[in-house]
Image 1 (tube, one colour):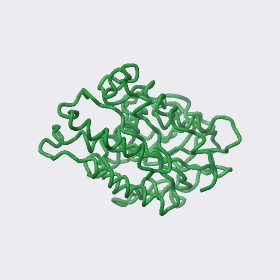
Image 2 (image 1 turned 120 degrees about the horizontal axis):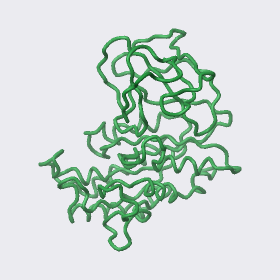
Image 3 (image 1 turned 90 degrees about the vertical axis):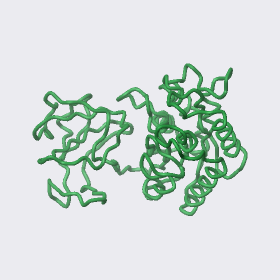
Image 4 (image 1 turned 90 degrees about the horizontal axis):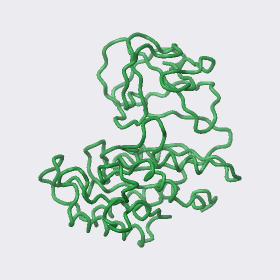
Length: 326
């Protein structure tokens, strides 16, 4: 396994190439169900730069860990090419395999913001390799020049995820400790979950499941808020974006829209969150507020496009995240 600064596509800058070791060894075996952290690597990087991580599997290996909606190109070729400046005739995929995170030690102890959500946080339908998910826009804004210090933005979106129930990954309630509370330096979590709790029942994924009422989703939010507060982490609630005419049979209905409106009204007015960002208002169509604005629609009427993600990233009040103190 090796790490280097990316020179674009499958290329690296050779002078930045480093060997990754585990307990001083260049090979390792994963224990089922357990994460594995490498030894520290001496590789200076600048904020928002791209790194390339190369992994060699000597034997056929079942794929147990995958980020299916990576929105970054992975390059796969035969043989051990981990030290190559460029990969020979690689196959390409838009998923990430085996790697779960990269930890970077910063000089100035940056504050961490976790974007916690589903495919809309994961960046579905954003341009591949462009880093145009809404958390990417937020990160670039937070790290623009100014006296407020550095920020790390962690994207913990999982496509298809829900607040209350497992399906695409375990539920938000079940993964909060792993994906938010155990991350270093977290001060804020931006919570955008719930659209799949509302949308899945009655679709091919859950054809006989009952509709999820707004109070159940709200109770889930209350638990996420309470557990975060126990760790001293503040929670910014994000309103659920419109999805009328979503291109998935059964996903939207007038009754489901009433649930979305009830949940959003609670997010805006309950005072349960430490702050609120109105993503719904940022991307909805003024002429039909139940739908995404056409210029922000990826085409499936559920997921935003790059412009929509930019509008979401720009809707967050940076002064709230940058404020120091309780």
